[in-house]
Length: 429
Picture 1 (cartoon, rainbow, N blue to C red):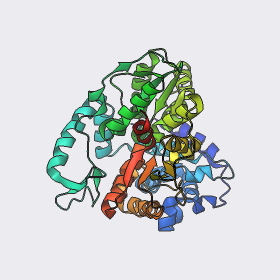
Picture 2: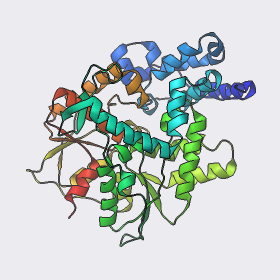
Picture 3: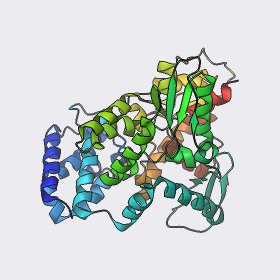
Picture 4: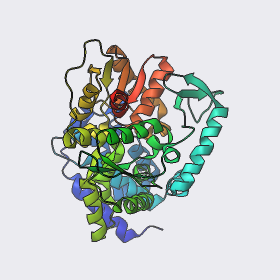
């Protein structure tokens, strides 16, 4: 049962943040969902108007409120372009938490989030079984992109071309690592994240290899779990906080200077959302998350800003690479020049696509629940990538990589999808 007093307090805090919105409509121009549907209910302004009467709506139509809030990618486009500085992402996340506290989680979300995601070891075991089932239920779609598609019509997969689950995840290749500082004088702790571990272990290995090559000590604690953003996006703050505390304990040990990730969403979650929402009012815990957040950097940000990686102009005959800006990296964290520097450092020619920072349409669970809409948004991105003539599209987020693999695999494109760290690792001697 929900605590009515706690619920009223949460709604009151939310209402204090809502008054900043001037209803100017600037969010309409940048919202990827609104650009496809044209519905006021799908844009930030419409959702904020709905939330002003949240307390009444909770009793009248909680399901309707949830459906409208769920139709959001949490990409941060509206927040990045808001002239009033409305903290839209924080408001939407808090509103989803209020809904979950009032109406509870539906059985499927409860099973996935609290039954599986909150238990890292169980998640690993289930992923291994899912990899075996994938070989049975799907057939190869693209060798270039390592994707599969359903053997039979599947309402669950909905025509997707899915990235193959790795036969040997990162945590089984490298369970734990603790290397001392090298010539750089720095030591980095590496938060791997779910998708790198289970879908892109080669990219995770590339992170370790690059750090070693550049004389950076590396700490990779065993037993890492999810950063918790899927749970938080669903309003399940209990699972989010449980995962944050689990990972915090792992990284509290050891002497290191920075925590690096190769996932834009993990970087945003650890550096911004853990300090804001995971402390549950405990001052010492809040300070621990704030300290960790200050030390958390995207891998490209760490290599360029702290280690000093740079490059001369690439050869005119070097392969063409275009870059997709992950929403949480550029719009939420302001990191966008550093990944491009790594592309040049890898000896590749960068060709910019139109609207490189437009959302790819992934949005985590949004892609699962609203795949048709996600695909429509993504197809615009795919067309812009193809128009550059690039052989490779690089990015800095494994979730974006998964969406891009689906887009190009379905279209039959002869284009590779890479993480920028993959390119740099391949270029190092």
